[in-house]
Amino acid sequence: MRIGAIEAGGTKFVCGIGDENGTIVDRVSFPTEMPETTIANVIAYFRDKEVEAIGVGSFGPIDLDPASPTYGHVTTTPKPGWSGYPLLGTLKEAFDVPFGWDTDVNAAAFGEATWGAARGLDSCVYYTIGTGIGVGVYAEGKMVHGLVHPEGGHVLTRRHPDDRFEGFCPYHGDCLEGMAAGPALEKRWNMKGKDIPADHPAWAIEAFYIGQAVAGTILLLSPKKSFWAAASCINGSCCR
Amino acid sequence: MRIGAIEAGGTKFVCGIGDENGTIVDRVSFPTEMPETTIANVIAYFRDKEVEAIGVGSFGPIDLDPASPTYGHVTTTPKPGWSGYPLLGTLKEAFDVPFGWDTDVNAAAFGEATWGAARGLDSCVYYTIGTGIGVGVYAEGKMVHGLVHPEGGHVLTRRHPDDRFEGFCPYHGDCLEGMAAGPALEKRWNMKGKDIPADHPAWAIEAFYIGQAVAGTILLLSPKKSFWAAASCINGSCCR
Image (cartoon, rainbow over all chains, first blue to last red; front, side, top):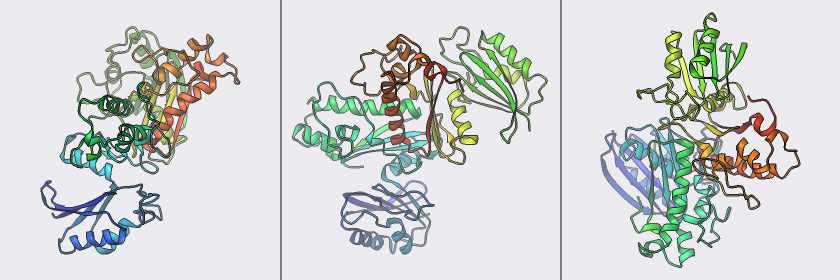
């Protein structure tokens, strides 16, 4: 079975082709421009690929409620042109195949549960730490969506006693994302995460916040695995 | 269908008979003594009741993993006589019917989802605040158990700026339970929760901690309902 995959990111779109055994046979990447341009690239890529199904993991917030009139839309993103864009619907008009549709971090968590670090387990929690912080929860064999979708990057943590940074989250100031996402490192230390040396005190503070959030999640959900992926703005590794 | 129900609490056991429509036809209560005495009372109660199934919501920690050799046991409770007691197995030896088995707070959350405040919804979160604090998570139509079972009462919250109480949790000091369960009120103000007047500053501090924990849970799980029940040691209402 040929399966199409779309990682719809705020910086780039990654599209690929794989099969039900996890073999990936092709992969491309486009920068994320205005939606019409970007989705035209996606449609052109899949046009001759004869995929039988497509899964989409999207940046958000997005509407995941099948009963909602705006199901499949990107909702209130500040990203120019994307707020209210019917991402899933536009793809469905182009390809008459079954679609999977979830947040980028839920797709990553589900990927780890299916093929990766949580393979064979019925629960895991996945943190992605980059420009923002996202949390994907997989519990009792299902992705957790709930009323809207989780925004676990915005939980409050205790402040590190040596940390005077006020936080950069426009909504909460010093929530987890405000204190530990990539821009927090950059604003606090006046250098990008990838340029901060490994022995710099920045990392003890960063670990303090991430550790507290992960511990709280483990207490609340008792997942069989918890892990996190850091994007290049944090530790210099390649975005997953 | 006649269904038996057991709420196995640290202070009392409540046993009852109901049916699949939610009608409760009988209910009794025993104090929780040593396990042999208590369970003998439970078995005597159900002996002539001709129930076709029994559900048990138990104080904990308990072993919920069917693959574990100690499945159905109370595990590491400080309660005299109960640590390691095979609660479910003892009941199963007495009654050859199907059993449901979960934590007390999960049973309460499942009850609210089935018959109560979250009826018809596929997610809710239930806090019980008494001698300790427990959290039951129901997500995507399933109770969340995970690796062991959640202990969401022990998450860290930020301290209230006017609160100098050190917390009473023997494991964490000033975690949520250590700051907001019944004994925290009593130790902080030298009176029991039920005796603290409604206009006392204790309640603003109590709300500060509970609100913070509930907000964090909503961010992480986006449940369709969140609610909490306070036992008599907090607000003078009857234990549910």
